[in-house]
Length: 183
Image 1 (cartoon, rainbow, N blue to C red):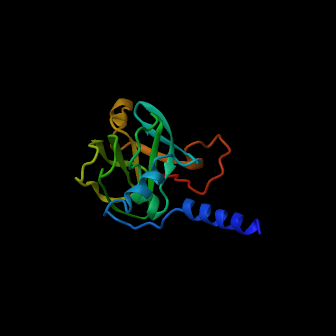
Image 2 (cartoon, rainbow, N blue to C red):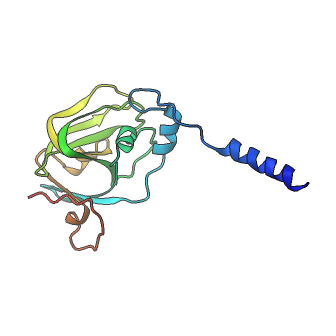
Image 3 (cartoon, rainbow, N blue to C red):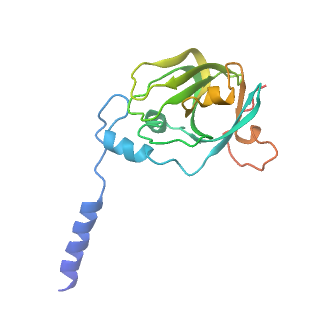
């Protein structure tokens, strides 16, 4: 007889702790509460990315937004971003990409990367919460978001070359399928 009340208590505890299904609300980020939780903390696996600029190689450790859901959430609701951090949005197949800053709390530089690895356009210091679209206007292989003002601070310019994965750090034994080796 004592097992029955214990089972009821356990069932009630499980019911109270389950997460409600996503309602998919606004146009940029679905359900705001679920996206905030999903994008508030960086993912565990970081990908090495190197930008070869006229001022030398600039190395970053970036998150990858590989799925449509990850790309939709992006860096929304983040309160900070490491100086060498960022998020990479691969475009497979390459396409003209347009980004906005809705629900993004920090300024970002958006680097639009062509299929040959060169930076086609830098949307510098994109304004938090802005709904103004930012685009290179040409098909790109990826978009890299880094902290606002970092590109200028590091001397990164349009035409510089970007690599990631094992191609970015050929001397390291890196196991990833996300390799971008232009040229």
